[in-house]
Image 1: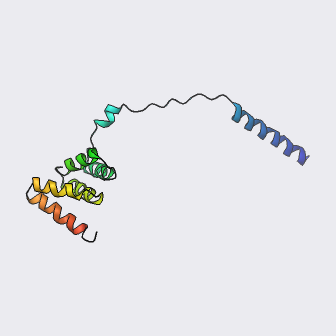
Image 2: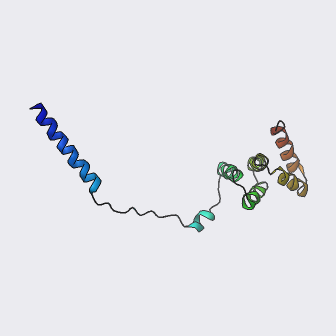
Image 3: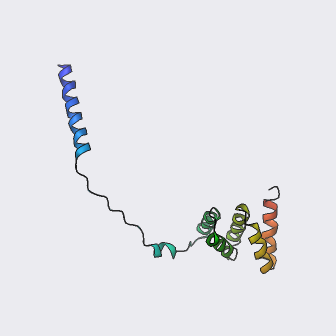
Length: 122
């Protein structure tokens, strides 16, 4: 009797497995967000802008360098410092020095001093 129950369960399991394997499937529709909507939505909060800066720092190319340089003008000092750090960390420290020469003042000096302190051993 026990063997009969096990065989019945085995048969049911095989039937369920066969149905799952051979059953027709509906295609899954995946819709992408419109590219224009993604590209035109700038980060809003300070934390979002800092995250975007560090993401840009991981990329190479003229576009990421331009965006990092633009972030040096962010009204928030934290975002500007993150951009300076991302530039130096990604080997584009000359861009930061060029920016500081083109924008003399207390903020540029503070950025260079802080970055110099952060990267003193590198």
